[in-house]
Amino acid sequence: MPIISFASSKGGAGKTTSAIVLGTELAASGAGVVLVDADPAGRLAKWAAIKDIPDGIEVIQSAGERSILDEIDEAASKAAFVIIDLEGSASRLASFAIGESNLVVVPSGEEQQDADSAVDTLAEVSREGRSRGKSIPAAVLLCRTNAAVKSRLEKFIQAQLRAAAPVFKTQLHRRTAFSAVHNAGAGLRQLDRGEFNGVEKAIANAQSFASEVIDMLEGQEATSDAA
Ligand SMILES: Nc1ncnc2c1ncn2[C@@H]1O[C@H](COP(=O)(O)OP(=O)(O)O)[C@@H](O)[C@H]1O
Ligand SMILES: [Mg+2]
Image 1 (cartoon, rainbow, N blue to C red):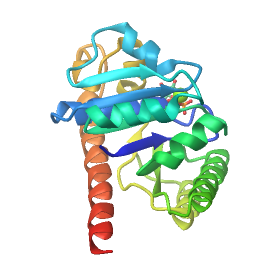
Image 2 (cartoon, helix red, strand yellow; image 1 turned 90 degrees about the vertical axis):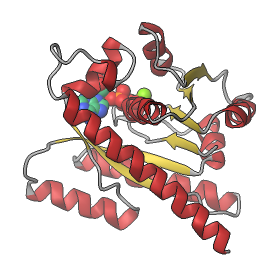
Image 3 (cartoon, rainbow, N blue to C red; image 1 turned 90 degrees about the horizontal axis):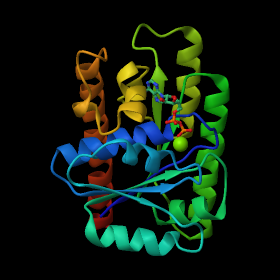
Image 4 (spheres, rainbow, N blue to C red; image 1 turned 120 degrees about the vertical axis):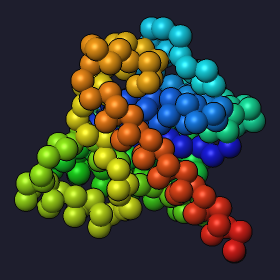
């Protein structure tokens, strides 16, 4: 029951979208997933209400900082993966969720502001770990990126991120299919191929992101077994 949080101090970084993409992808592979909407804005809950969410996924809306730890425990007792979508600012609720996480995914675009926010968020995760006497694994997910050739600025920004934390090899490129799930509901696989471009490419992106997440979590298990 790994717990995976999506965190970044920047609104619009791609947390909710990437959390939906990961959750629906893991569920498509047969795993039970609880998605916890821990953002008072409730975007994840809104997504879940549009139409039937895929089998294997349950979405719960957190009642806030007083109950988040109980909510996480309960979710972890029944699902193979717990995915927490956090709000875009530091809060006690976010601290509690980060402290419980086996992996914190920090989405970032390729602009300097995004990179600065990602680095701030990574520092916050590291402080949370220090205050608990443990290290909390975190990695940067580049999203809303251009699938075409990289400019020098983009390479420079990616280098800054790599200096701060591991960066997923997979990027969730800027694709209509990713933003469409917010309106259409359900996952990428349920999108109407006639209506939206690039659904198959988005699914391939999502699959490789999900398998990197699983590899990262398995790598941690291997390390803790050896310890
Ligand atoms: N990979 C992507 N491709 C296209 N649009 C994206 C992608 N990721 C996020 N978006 C869009 O960017 C906006 C902000 O994303 P969101 O996931 O809500 O960010 P956050 O939860 O960090 O505030 C949304 O309109 C979303 O549809
Ligand atoms: Mg959000």
